[in-house]
Image (cartoon, rainbow, N blue to C red; front, side, top):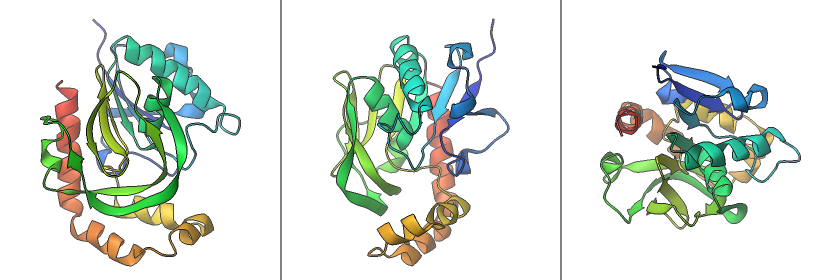
Length: 218
């Protein structure tokens, strides 16, 4: 019997596993992946990126990734999408990813629409948001939690979160270290947000790893 692996698909060199980093997760870069060689028996984490799920002309590997996601999710493979990963899942399964009118940035509480064990630890916690792209839900998806926009949904054996449970101080600083990021966040209190992250790092690390273990045991 084939050993089940957890494989993380990296869509952007700056958006890595962060708090989820461990030796048991194999990493592959989306632009180098031979999608047909990936076993549907494995489990996959689809990570975020600065690009939109719809930018297939600039990032042609996203089209192949979405075609692969549609196939494996429909066949029952377990996939965990984060930020862009959630948008790719939505877009590949009949929803639509698009650029919204505003940026969601900072730590916010979620509004839950359904009780689920896998996300139970988030009910009394805040999650970190940094995105402008969002999506409409696929017809067969179930919305678990939202802000103004969808934040958690499930579809078949897969889950998707728009927020960044994997964020660390290092990732945050790396993402902010560009003229584009500084310009788009000029009206936000970036310093206080970073301090909140640093103060609560162990809590957020515990939550994402708890979520990951529950997902593995589904």
